[in-house]
Length: 194
Image (cartoon, rainbow, N blue to C red; front, side, top):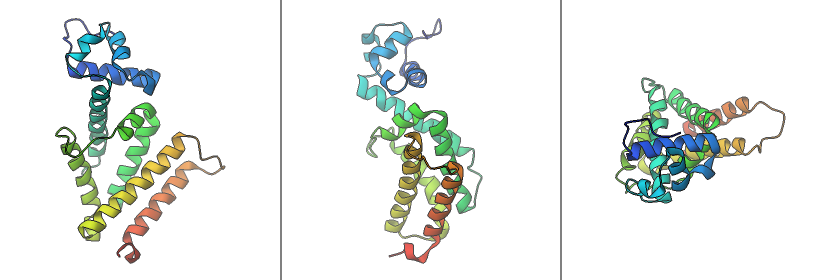
């Protein structure tokens, strides 16, 4: 997968090549040397644009979060709280099923709110949750707990599914739906409030 003729090397080209390597070969392919081979260039050429493997992983994770958000935005017209939570949940699960290596890099790369490139992404994610949870009128601490509970439930289920840990003969789709129902019921419950 070399660069198209006439296209200069840019961070975007490097990140797209890295994502293609990830999709084709899995997480082990996410490295400057592998991406350079895919682009038909020497590794030092990449270092002019992206400063090593950690920076490459960060750039890829940022792009993947952007792609995930674009998928979430397809549901931006939803106004019902439960529908928004379900849309986020199914979008995340579908992304993980369709792009397992990309999902792993996206969710396991630690990004900080102090990172000026990640902060707007985090704000967008929070805006989805804020819209979904607005009807519950949570105080700030309760809102944080609710977001963490939803996020942990989704990530836990998806990771267990990806790892093949669900071995009992019951539909994973039905179990996922039941988990979502339980999360939504917990949010609606007065017991959620301290």
